[in-house]
Image (cartoon, rainbow, N blue to C red; front, side):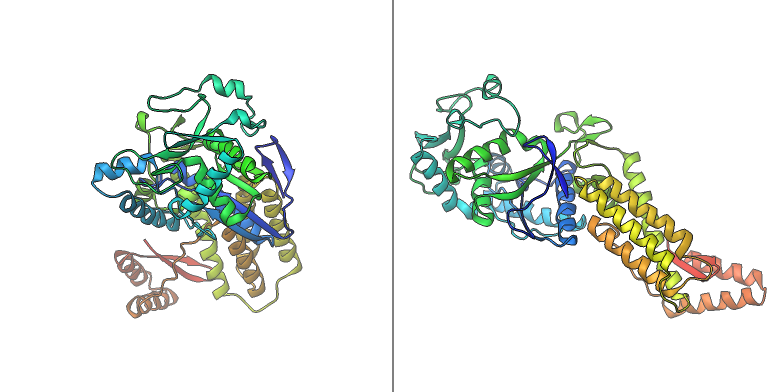
Amino acid sequence: MKVFNTLTRQKEELKTIEEGKVKIYACGPTVYNFIHIGNARPLCVFDVLRRFLEYTGYDVRFVQNFTDIDDKIIKRANEENLTYKEVSEKYIEEFWKDVKGMNIREATVHPKATENIDEIINIVSSLIDKGYAYAVDGDVYFSPKKFDEYGKLSHQPLEDLEAGARIMVGEVKKEPMDFALWKSAKPGEPYWESPWGHGRPGWHIECSAMVRRYLGNTIDIHCGGQDLIFPHHENEIAQSECCNGASFANYWMHNGYINVDNVKMSKSLGNFFTVRDVAEKYGYEPIRYLMISSHYRSPINYSTDVIEQCKASLTRLYTCRDNLDFALSNAADGEVSEDISAMLNKRREQFIAALNDDLNTADAISAVFELVRDINSNVITDAPVKGNCEAAAKLFDELCDVLGLVYDRKKEDLDSEVEALIAQRTEARKNKNWAEADRIRDELKAMGIVLEDTAQGVKWHRE
């Protein structure tokens, strides 16, 4: 597999630290609100990365954190007259509803920042001892000027980054670019004991601590949204490499932005949508489909028309899979033919090649739709063969599972009344009693049962 490494700005062959194993860290949400559709993209994209690596035989250890203490959480707690912990737990619970709705697998570990305070304090202390950080009035700051490679991820020299930096009111840092590792507690704020007094961790140090604790000093892949490259990921590198004396992450993968009606999503512009908002109107699966329908590094556009197109594409996939089940129920015994086997292998190889090329989910989806076309033309025939149907269904399920799609199939059972009516209609048609057949069809339609007459028999679905 080749991935585009933000660090080197080129595609590189994925070579893991330990053969057959991959250590991945993905930045998770700050839990003070419902996740928005911008958050959904890295969740869906890197879920496919994890699934594909497992599909191709890797043992994946996937860590995704919760930032459960932060200025935004404290602000929300004050607004809702809750504790910071009540706010974070509330929105972690809402997070699980949304990610399960989008069929995102749980990480191997979902650590919380507040569960790792001791590790954070150890790293901060080490950075002070090594001369990279300094304490002043209960705050601790990291000095990027002490790290010669600062800016290597965002590909900007320190001088350029420094030009836009400012010292805000109340900050006691020495240089504008210095960033907080530990913040002294303001009156009424939650705090933890530390060598520098009551306080809480800065945002960037949390991830460095959780990476080291759950994955080690050096990991294979660090991923997240493009907006995190600077300053968050740049600062993670500086902290971790200065503390540990080792490379932090060998590959960096970043997904592109989401636009809404071709304009960058922003609360100030009023074009801001939560996953819950969109799911209540269109369902969760169209959101997942949208997030992986383009190459992960390209921007994607959310609009009503686009999400409707995603729904239509999913309908094609579901219809194909339902038709395969129906064909199988009417199939004659027989092994998979050489022609069908070769066709299926070709689509499998096409799918794998797409994802091996920097996780090209757009081309992988195209391979699935070419498989659908092949199935419709060559497997679902007037005389279907059991072996062909079973092999096609197995591959269809396999590839869709890697993409995390077609996960909401409902196997429906007809009750005895409906079964009896369909049997009566079949008998009426056999006797050429078209009026009676039409009457029964209308009766079933009124019950929400839609019939489709095919060469293999009667198909049905609920409206």
